[in-house]
Length: 118
Image 1 (cartoon, rainbow, N blue to C red):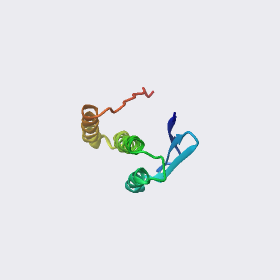
Image 2: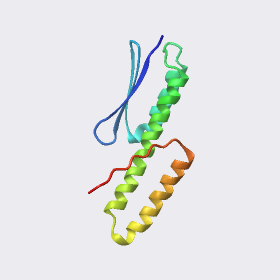
Image 3: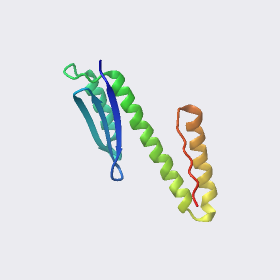
């Protein structure tokens, strides 16, 4: 029986570490925000390699994790701009942010956590 664990480690900004631990095997993907596309292609290459036990299912799960992380980064950047924007720009930026957020909430299993800031 194979036990798999997927680990996402937050490191310095713009650097991501995603790992799959599968019994004695370890698949570790280190990529920055500019190389997401290449990382997704690598998952596919690993899945078609008959010498690896890396499956299409694992490639799909990891690619979903990568895409979710990218989307969360985009939304966080939008929210940061709202907070630091000049008052006359804040309303427009907040409207754009909530428009993007509502599309995510309607179209996917996006997880939202809200923290009160004092």
